[in-house]
Image (cartoon, rainbow, N blue to C red):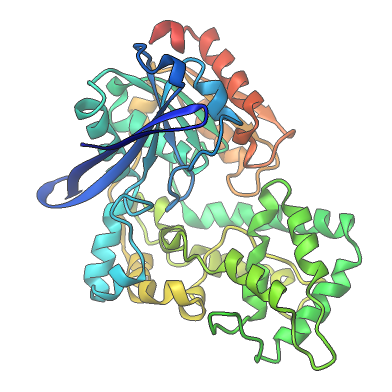
Length: 429
């Protein structure tokens, strides 16, 4: 169903809404999935191939374009771009605290389990076959979008012409404990770089942590700003210009004579750490590694205990990264309604397998992947191991970009060239 057609300067857009099963094995209960079709207005009547953008996350809605900058402008030269709000996000039957508050713990956990990669790919394949005429399309998977790409190649490669992946080849044998074992040293290295650039902030952050340890600093929504919540802001160190954003934030983190922190600082911290816009990012962060037997069991929390340098009383205070901890679902207002369900997800002893290793090894769909050597979120070693076990895959390894390099149009241009070398891309659409 097309709900609207309109033009943002330089972009012609159509909005599509489809009903899909909550559980693809049982169609009785349905949810809505939203996708935005974007095309160059001058080419709206042309028979263009489609490029499906698979957003990072989990729990991230698709971009809301303001112009043709970055990869989008480059893609629109040859593609009709499809921006999918993954189920549970944006306008696709969004999940938030109000939804979770109406569900019991087990009911909530079972509900959330239907919002992983297998279901998202089933939604995408439904859109391809019913809304977009059944023609094969290409995909561009950013970060978690790479996880979705490999699920797509495992479940329905017949729907794909070519796949572009940026910073997101997952381990083929997902193991949350191994992921975080590799992650903490990389995050420590990012902290070292931050303090190398801004050495005076070692003292700034130490004083700030001492003040927060008193336990009476409140954020604008009433949550207590704890030291560990402050540390969680380090999630931004894997993006550009994350170090600079942290520098300018800390510049205003100076208590007055009575010990009160500036409102502007507290509002910024709330915005960056509330998860109000993307609670599924926190709720499903470790569940994306569930595949086959074995509970994720709060892997990030267990691994943190092995790294005393990340303790709240350590100095210099180290910031953490893309790790979710049990305390977040107690201390952060937008996440509290998820707490009981997420606890049960962490204990779940087995998950449906995500990837078909034999099918990936025999893959014939051209895959071009940008692997960011210093990526803080997705380990480059695991990415390269995955690429070595996949058919028809080329990798470009670079340390020129951080995890969000996709937003530089040169990255997509480079990957498109690799696909053309493999005989895929536009000429093969």
